[in-house]
Image (cartoon, rainbow, N blue to C red; front, side, top):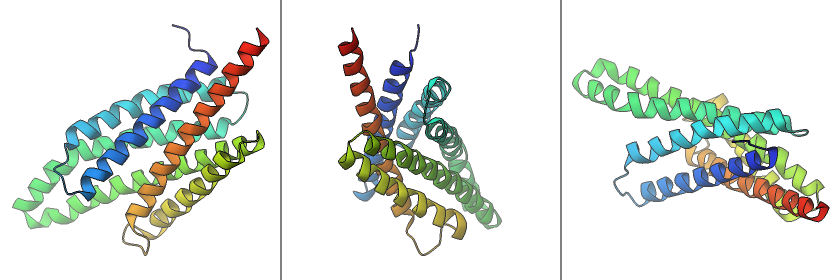
Amino acid sequence: MEFTNLRTVKITSYLLLALAVTQAFYTALYIAEVNIPRQLLWGLEGFLFTILIAFAGAAMVQAKNYQVGWSAIAFSAVLNVVQVSIGLTMFGPFREAASQLDALGLVAGSVVALSFMIYYAAKLLLGFAALIFGIAKMTDGAKALGGLTVLVGVVAMFANAILIVFGRDAFLPSAVAGGSGAFATLLLAFCLTSVVREDEERLKKSL
């Protein structure tokens, strides 16, 4: 199957949209204190991020512009696969071991801290991508969507950078960094979907 640049961008936008929805669903369950099927949700995210690596990487190679934005999306997906993998394979065993031996509590905590550090780095990259593609949309005339995407992207970048630099126990709640990153992902998906729609319309007019 041949994946043109237009098709690659379209699939990437759908993957980002699906990931934004899964993260919002997970957050809603967590706030409602509902038992969260972590294996299912995190496993689904791991699968989607793995596919996203391939398509965002392909888009980065195919694109004539905004390669840095595509690079940010692709490498955020790589980081998210690592972060989800740590959560699925290491949280449970270390938590159980720490409950049996108090000395392992610090080790278990360090594993969680590592996972969050990777999580913040991935969200920072998605915020950076939102900034880049938001500016591109503003340049194309979509000032409302582009401007909002830029604003949320900058917030996501700064929020996650603060927690990377000052640690998870810094003055900024972790939920702000994660929430702004998820919102930036959603708006980024809308920007890319809009780009695809405009390109398809130009292609039809040229035929």
